[in-house]
Amino acid sequence: MPGFKSIGKRKTEMTVTIDCRMIDESGVGVYLRGCLPYFTNCENDFLLLGNAEKLRGFASGPNVKVLDCTAKPFSPGEMLFFPGGIKKAINKTDVYYSPFFNVPPGIKVPVFTTIHDIIFPDMPEITSKAGLFVRMRFFRRAYRKSRGIFTVSEFSKSRIEYHLGNGKEIIVANSALRQMFLDYRMNAGSVEKRDAIVFVGNIKKHKGLECLLESFAAAKKEGLSHKLIVVGSKENFRTFDNAVTQKADALGDSVVFTGFVSDGALMDLLASASLLVQPSLYEGFCLPPLEAMSLGTGVLISDIPVLKEVYADFPVTFFKAGNSASLKEKLLELLTGGNRVPFVLPDKLLRKYTFEKTAAKIMGHIGQTQQ
Image 1 (cartoon, rainbow, N blue to C red):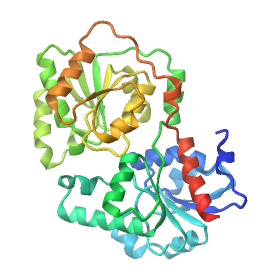
Image 2 (image 1 turned 30 degrees about the vertical axis):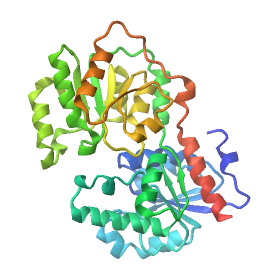
Image 3 (image 1 turned 45 degrees about the vertical axis):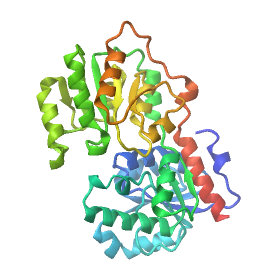
Image 4 (image 1 turned 180 degrees about the vertical axis):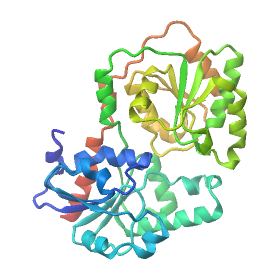
């Protein structure tokens, strides 16, 4: 991790509490696990809050301590009965940082948070009225209590300002490619491609899987030989996703739901796929296209504003978001042509988004505000 200390170095060290209770969550956990090694390698001291066993690997340095905490974020137990001893320990540090928009009660030191996106008021149809009300309470509370707010894209920044206000500085600290993808790229050698399209993501309405299934079915009728591999479990569908379930069932064994896969299995799937398709209707950043390209797989993604922002410089193919005809045409164009040149992502783009840069921006900004 060369260079990070010089970026985040301060004349006076500070002690930072990092809330790590969501380290196993998909988007938040990836962001946190990516940043933690660079956070703890800078000149500050750290108190990591969360499951002590899971955090053991991040606490090897003398500047890092772990405080075991089982209080679930956003739960009534956290808001009403957050342990007094843990609050006392946090308040003995200089700063509290959360990689999400949860802020426990009773914290008296300066608070910094990362709000990855604000999808619920932008797409209220994905939750109930009561769910939206509760989430907006947490969003507004985090905004009110935070001295500084980070987010992962200019798009998310604009939406946070729209819904929560522009009275506070919001700093873009992008999500990034995890080191293990770079290691895999270096060590795996040439990976044989197979006739497979991969979709990666939580199986929720805004991920656009219904559109992909419609397009895939139409492309199959026009000669597409590939299978569609959905990295997720069909059992996770909610009741309003019955139409998606029916479309998937109608395609038989042409669609494979993997269920949970390990990081190693995910990289194998991405490296061997002919194409990654990300048909999202809404994202805060969206990592799977970057991960696929790093492993030599081309991507087809929807033309929503955030993906056009994040991947503006990358060799990606866009289709019209939510338009199954546009997606079908691009699938056939990319997968049924003649011999294709192997996909190679230039090193300059491979290192455009790194967690070293992200961690440096977060700690650098926290340090400046504490001086």
